[in-house]
Image (tube, rainbow, N blue to C red; front, side, top):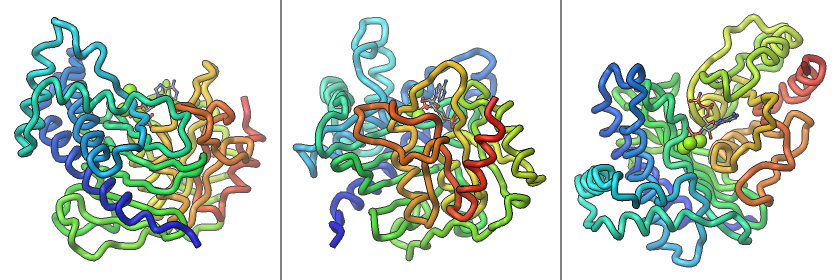
Length: 329
Ligand SMILES: Nc1ncnc2c1ncn2[C@@H]1O[C@H](COP(=O)(O)OS(=O)(=O)O)[C@@H](OP(=O)(O)O)[C@H]1O
Ligand SMILES: [Mg+2]
Ligand SMILES: [Mg+2]
Ligand SMILES: [Mg+2]
């Protein structure tokens, strides 16, 4: 029988929601010209504050679980970054958490593990930093990996509005435990009855709706154009930032998410995928690399045994893999 992971999933949901509240409030303060000025300070503040509160929450309940987080506090500890430390502390305290600067730095560094343990969490405190700065989509993604298998996931999409979201609800949190299905609740109303998420039933490649990164450096857009041609789909591509793409496929608002390898030999990071992968799989979808191999989460912080990532509603998976092979540049 599969393990229940009841305390793990509820702790993970609470943690990503607490972090999302901070991220959303920081995102609201972003000036409209922040992108032109290349001012990354809002995302830096929110990234660190998010990692701090999530690591703190996990440590309290699971003191022996290592965490593989995207961020670490090294830079933040320098004298010139004192204003950042102060702002991060202020954002955390504003949510009612008592903390000192020293504690916040130590919480961030709970996330320093390399992923070599049998059981560990992986955390992306803000995924889609560029989307965050554009005041668009971002995600907070947390997953528990045991013996190389993702067992628990919580994926908060604080700005996502979908077909299946609730009236007046801004943002959703999707969660999953392996073998138990995936569910979604509004970010601000965790006690409503969750919706079960289910991928789309579309079988024809001609109708496939494809999601991909907004940022052209993060996926080979030319190649994906060829994949579209191979599939013969005329449905418009859905370009959204972050692991919100996994949420969109999990709910059946798109059939395919492609992360095609760029020429630079980029190794995908586990925190960019783990949360989203389990949510999609438990919604009935399929995730492999472009060669059809399962993603290997037993190799530390990257997916070094895999090339790219292919996410589908399952029904279209073989067609999509064939189209990628035919379209490979
Ligand atoms: N070259 C390259 N190739 C593939 N992936 C890369 C690359 N560079 C960065 N990243 C990672 O992409 C993460 C953001 O995901 P997306 O591309 O889906 O979102 S976005 O369109 O950039 O907003 C982003 O995650 P965050 O840093 O958490 O935002 C990066 O880890
Ligand atoms: Mg990321
Ligand atoms: Mg990130
Ligand atoms: Mg980053």
